[in-house]
Structure formats: structure tokens, C-alpha cells
Image (cartoon, rainbow, N blue to C red; front, side):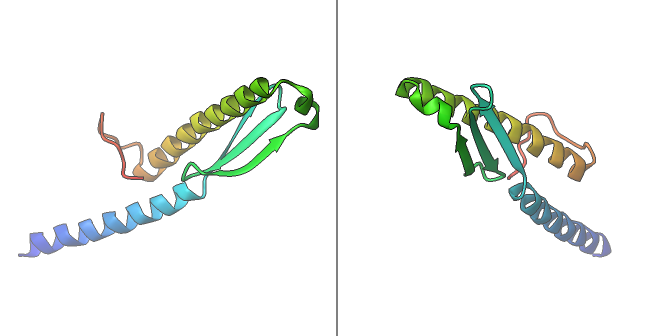
Length: 105
């Protein structure tokens, strides 16, 4: 019975730790840029755009160019966010990982 109580306590600790981890990950921000910094997009840890900046100089370009630069900056931000998220998870788990296992974030 005592071992079962220990297991339950560890499970509760793990659950609390995962909740804290999710909250920390939500607060992460990542910036993506394109066109020589003419387009900047900032994402939060939930992959939402929280800021977008478009240089005035690029507004004279063809609309297709602007659309491509926005997509490129967004992709760049997503890559950066994934890297930062994985880094944070690694810190929180002490580098412990299971190949193929996706943390529920």
C-alpha cells in the first residue's frame, strides 16, 4: 500500500510539473524575419501571431512578393519557436527524452 501511495504522489508531482511546463512554454516568443528584416512576425508559445511588422519600403513591391515574404517570416518564426520549445522541454526534463515521444504541449 505504501508503494502505491508513493506512485500516486509521484504522479501528482509529474502532473504539476507538466502544468508548469505548459505555462512556461506558452510564454515563449519567437521572431521570424524575411526580406532582409523587411517583414517580421512574432509568435507566442501557442503558435499565435502576437506581432507583425512590415517595412514601408516593401509596400511598393508586387503583392505576391509581400505575400511570399509574410509566409517566409511565419515559417522562420515557427522553426525558431519549435527550437525554443524543445530547448525548454529539455531543460524541464533534465534532458530525459524518449525517441518518438511527443510531450503534450
